[in-house]
Length: 225
Image (cartoon, rainbow, N blue to C red):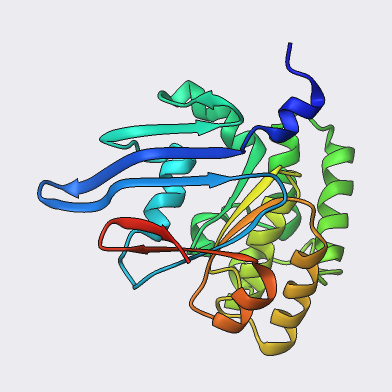
C-alpha cells in the first residue's frame, strides 16, 4: 500500500518518448518527455502551431500518442478507461471557451462538474457560487452564457475547471480576451491556488508572474528553459 508521503512524491504526470503526428511525415511531437510534480508552476512556450495544445490533449487522453508512454498519478495510461480518472483529477482549460461551455446559464455550466462527480444539487450550487465569487463573478449565476463577452466567458470557463477541485491545472491561454484589471485579478488567484499548474500563454509578463519553470516546444522537441 502506498503511504500518503509516497503518493505526494509520485509525479502527477510523467511523459517519456512521446511522439504524435496528425498526418504521416508531419510530426507534432518527436520523443517528448515531461515531468510535472505537485506544486510546480510550468510555462509551456513555443511558436504558434508547435503542438502545445496537442500536448495538453495527449495528457488528458483526448488524443493518443503513436509512441512513448504517458503516466499520470503513478499509473501508465493507455486506454480510454485509464483516462477517466485523469480527467476527474486534472482540470483542462480549453483554448476556446466555447468548447467548454454548453449549458444555458452560468450556474449550470459551473455546477455541471460537481454534479457529475456525485455532489447533490445543493452542494454543486454552493460550490459553483463559491467558485464564481472567487473569480469576481458574483451575480453571474443566472446570466445566459452565450450572451457574455469573450472575457467573461473565459472566466466562466475557468470557473467550470476550478469547481471540480482538481489536483492539477492545464491552462491554455487563460488570460486571452481579459482586460488588464481582470488579468491582474487572475494572476492573484493563480498565485494562491495549491495545484500544480502548466500554462500556455504568449503573454510573457503573465508567465513571469505565474510560473517558475519553463519548457519550450519547437519542431516537435520539448526542452527545459
